[in-house]
Length: 124
Image 1: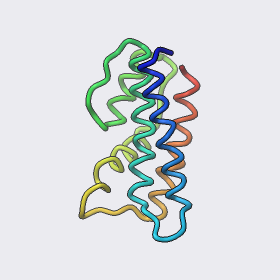
Image 2: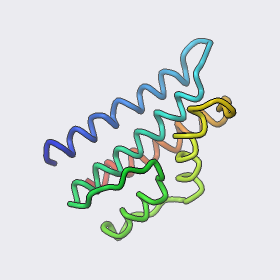
Image 3: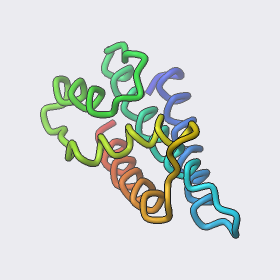
């Protein structure tokens, strides 16, 4: 793993505990932040793997698009589209007025990110 890939992974590895701390913090909880950091962890790991594979990742938060790129270079890669879409939505929708995550959405985003994180780290 080169230095650039290591930096992407290191940054991703900071996002997941940030999401977890906020999910289990005393009130007031920021469920929007849980969703955002969960998505960011996965996005950074996907981009790290693409860079590791000599593929320049696009500037996007769309995990489905990144997953499609991963499947082109790693034949064993797949992930449920519904979960990727759920996390992608969390990256943008909950950051601005008009949408807010609730307890269920935050817990779901965190759980999906943990599973994806484990899988992504296993393919490096």
